[in-house]
Every structure is written in structure tokens, then in C-alpha cells.
Image 1 (cartoon, rainbow, N blue to C red):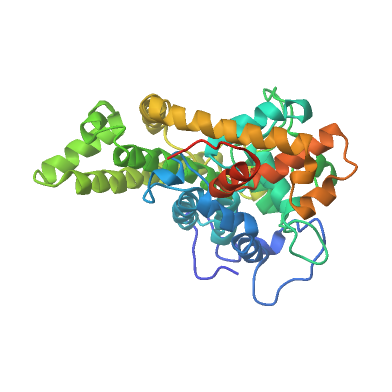
Image 2: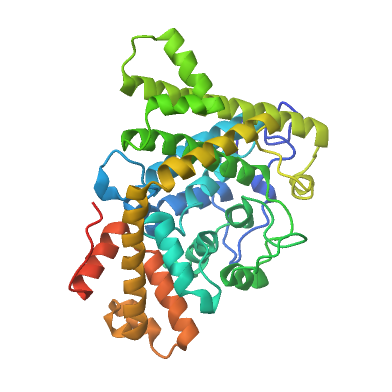
Amino acid sequence: MSEGRESRIGTGQDGLAPYAAHADASRGRLVFEPSSRTRTPFQRDRDRIVHSTAFRRLKHKTQVFVAYEGDHFRTRLTHTIEVSQIARAFARALRLDEDLTEAIALVHDFGHTPFGHAGERALDRKLQGCGGFDHNAQSLRIVTALERRYAEFDGLNLTFETLEGLVKHNGPVRGVGLGAPLPPQIAEFDARFSLGLELFAGLEAQAAAISDDIAYNTHDLDDGLRAGLIHVDDLQQLDLAGDILREVRDRYPALDPVRTGHEIMRRHITRLVEDVITASLARLEAIGPRTIDDVRAAGQTIVDFSAEMRTQVAQTKAFLFKRVYRDPRVIGVMGLAEGVVEDLFDRFVLHPSDLPTAWREQADGLGDVALQRHVGDYLSGMTDSFALAEHRRLFDHTPDLS
């Protein structure tokens, strides 16, 4: 259990805030397991996530730039580690369970395809006949079915709180105002083990979600600078990054461009983190939740930016979309990557015999829809490098994504 920590707003028996997730009050797992003598349920979740195959694959999955463009750009793994580090800072500041917060942060990108959002777009098009593709829903499928490491169950058999955080870290996924159909992977699992899809998740999940925003907004600026898509002076048009740029240049007028960029990024993260902590503590004071169920029923996200900072973050996102994500060089490479994923999907659906042995055996006897979903499961787990290797094995020409 967590020890020696006092809450700024009340204290639970285990040293956490009363509105935190308490490991000894976990709602448990789908498949019952005896308690560990040395670890809390949330610590066990975190450890299972770190030791999973899906976690290791994140090393070779693209964030924004394909890995072949240089080894200094972020991958899904480095992004995940950055998110986890920021999320733990929020957990300490708000007196939340750090192990649960870390577990949710570490698992949140498991369902991403090779080649980032390019691969996701391709699979979503190909799977329209069976519910489309959603990386968050695929993350759930990986940890509840596709990971096969344990003798007594498929998946990782994570606790309710970790699964709830994985599925709902961005808010409820079913209820009033949520018109999009529920992804089938989520609907199917929720029928077996209800995750309260109409409610908000606990603060640990909210901390992981806002950390994701902070990490990718900052490191996509950094990677954009490294790639030469933007210049340090371009940041002057942004309220947040521009103010930090002026602050750095006033203090270090002779600083070289590389260190200037690093200095801007570390201060960028600090400002965003400090804003979230201040704004979140204010919301906690105003709402006054006494339990995690009060947090779930609050009807709003509590761990979030202030209104002013939210406007500045939206400005940064719009800048990144225009100058980085929609840059013709990025669009061109991502278009080729989409083609690779579509080629592989079509090939494996038409010729399941080309699948690896275990996947081929599982495909035997599947109907059209089930086979397409099966192929989607296989492709979504691929790394960038493996997807390209498979394409070279099966096709006469594979595009150069460098």
C-alpha cells in the first residue's frame, strides 16, 4: 500500500485522498485471483502491462514520424514513458494512487497500429463492415483477449479500475450526447464485466489523459523542430510557446538554437503541469468529492487545464495540425504507409493461408466479418518494421518510407 502521504484535501486511511482509487477497495478482476502478499492489485496491473508483448512492440511503432526518418524522433514507447512520468507527478500532487495512474498511462496506446494514425485510418476504412477500427477499443481487446501469457485466462486480467481508466480516460463512452456507436470490442466486454460506460473514470485515469495531451503537444513541437518542419522563430505566433521563447531569449540571449529548443520544451511541460495542478485543486475544492464514486458522478472532467490554458493548448494543436501533421512531406509518407496496411489487409483476407501458423489456425472456419476482424487484430499488433517486412515478403514492390 502507499505510505507516508497526506492529502491536501482530506486523507484516507492509506494516506491517499478519499476521492482517490484505493487498492484495498478495488472492484476486482473478471477472473478471480488470490491477493498478492507483496503487491497491491494496481501494482500487479502495472507489472503485467510492462511485461506484455504489446508493451515491447511500442518501441517500433510510429508516433508522428516513421522510425526510418531518424532515431531521435518519438516512438509510441518513448511517448508512453513521457506520459507516465507526467501522470505520476499529478498523482503525487493530487494524492492519487501512483501505481494505478502509471498503469493506465503505460497501457493507453496499446491499440495503436503500425505507422500511427495512418495505419488506424487504413484499418478503419477496411473494417467498416464490422464496426470500424478504434485504437482505444483495440487496447481493451489486447489486454482482455489477445495477450496470451497466463494459464488460466486470456488477456492480462487487469482490475476494473485499470480497465475503466483505459476505456474512459477521455470521458464517458456511452450516454446522452454521445451519438457515435459503441465499438464492438467495448460493447462485448462490457456485457461480461460492466465498466460503467456512462460515467467518468477516476482521477487516476483523468491524470493519465491530460498527461497524454501535455506530452504530445510538447514533443510534437520538439519533433517538428528536429525535422525542420518548423523553426524556433515560428513559435512566436503561439501564446504559450511564444511567451516561453521570449522568456528564454531574455535570460539567455546567446543560447544556441538546439539548447533554446530544449529549454522551451521543458518550460512548456512545466507550465502545463502547474496549470493543471492549480486548476484541478480548485475544482476539487468546488465539487468536494468524498469518494471515487463522487468523482465518477461529477459530470465533468476534474483533472484538466484552466479555461485560459485550454485556449492556448487548442491554439498549439491547430498550429501542429497545419505545420506538422499536414505538411506535404508527412502526408506523402503517411499516404504510402496507409497503402502498405491496406495491401496487407486485402492479402490476408483473400489468402488467410499467408498468415503465421497460429493466426492461420485460428482463422479456420471464420465467417467473412469474423475473418476481417481477425486480420485487423493481427495487423494492429504489427510494428512498423514488421509490417514493411511482411509487405516485402508478399508483394513485388514495397514503398520506401524513409
